Amino acid sequence: MPKLTDFYVTVIDFFGALLPGAVFMCLYGKHLADLAKVPALASPGATWPAFFVASYIVGQLVLGFGVHLNDLVLLLRPSKDEQQLYEATKKLMATQLAILDDRKHIFYRVHAFLRLQSAEATAEVDRQIAEYKLFRSLAVIFVIDLVASIFLGMPRIRIVLAAIAAALAVWRFAFLLQWTYRTAFEYFILVIPKGKDVQADAV
Image (cartoon, rainbow, N blue to C red; front, top):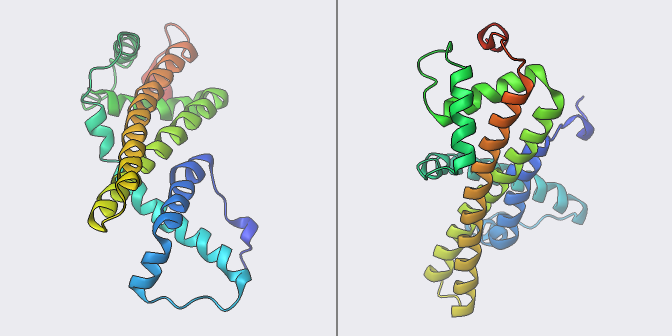
């Protein structure tokens, strides 16, 4: 029979789903329970497990919705350093499929290549991914909170704080997403030996 210790949570699961879900549940868990007419748990010991399960589920839903924000951020002009690293990475992958013609698809292939070649580089990129997913999910949650605060007629200070939190989360997410791409491209250029066939190793 599976045990609780068998439930494996990665750093991306924790920061990208569980933590944002817990923030949402702290803000609106009671409202959701009232709307769904969920009865109060009889045992206090069951409250925390239920909270974590609900947080993880909500966090995964927010994570799935927030992934579409990546395409919007990638429309922004990248920094000069990131653009140079992207162009260098693209040249190294010149033998790859024609579909790999934008930053997003090349990033996916770079991430897969690093997993095969360097555990240290993968760990660093995964940490960056976890951070941008955290702030991406928080951006979605704080925007929802802003709309809900206005709709529910919350005090003006509450609305202002929700707007500030949403703006800061969006700004931080945009920065971290571009920084993650830059880091991955740089690791790829450093990890791959000169003259080595990328296609032979990465496919």
